[in-house]
Image (cartoon, rainbow, N blue to C red; front, side, top):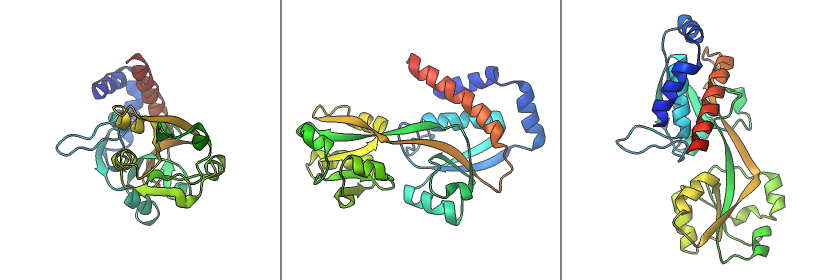
Length: 243
C-alpha cells in the first residue's frame, strides 16, 4: 500500500520540470543499494520483494530520479568493512559516523531516526534499571555504544553480550541467559508485543539518524536527492500518523 501511495505522491508533488531536467542530464542510472535486514525499515524475505519503510522511500526516490535500483541485503559486519575497502554504489539506513563521509556522499535528510530502548524482564527492580553494573546486557553486533551512554548507566563493556539477530536477543532474555537487551525501539516492540512479561524504556542518549549515501565517484546531485526525500519523508510521516 505504501509503495502505491508513494507513486501517486510523486505524480502530484514534484513538477514535471524537475523530472525532465534530471532525465535530460543522463539516462536511467542503475544502482546497487546495500543495507541489511532490519524490520520494519528494511525487510528481506525469501521469494518476496524487499519491503519496509526505508525501502519504500528509496523506491519513491528512484522513480523521481530515474534510477533503477537493485536492493542488496548483506550482513552488517561486511557492510561496514566495505565502506573503507571497496564501497558499493549506494548504502541506505546508514549513520554518518566515523570516517564514512570520506568515502561516501550522504543525504542531509535522514530516512528515519533510530531510537534505541532497553527491553527487560519485569522482575528487574527500579534500582537495577538505573544502574546496569553487573547486569548481562544483550545487543546486536554492530551497535555503537557511546561514552555518554556508558557513564549514564554505569556500564562495564564486558557486561555486553553481542548476538547476530534481534530474534536471538528475545530468545536469550526468555531463557534467562541475559537480563536485558538494547535494540531499535520499533523493532523490539514488534518482536516482544506478545510477551507480557517484557517491558522497555527509550534510551535518549543513543538516538541515531540514518541516511542514504552514495559512492563519491557517482555523478549524483545530492541537493536534488534531499529535496525529493524531504517530500517523501513528510508524506510517509503523515500516512503513519493517519493509520
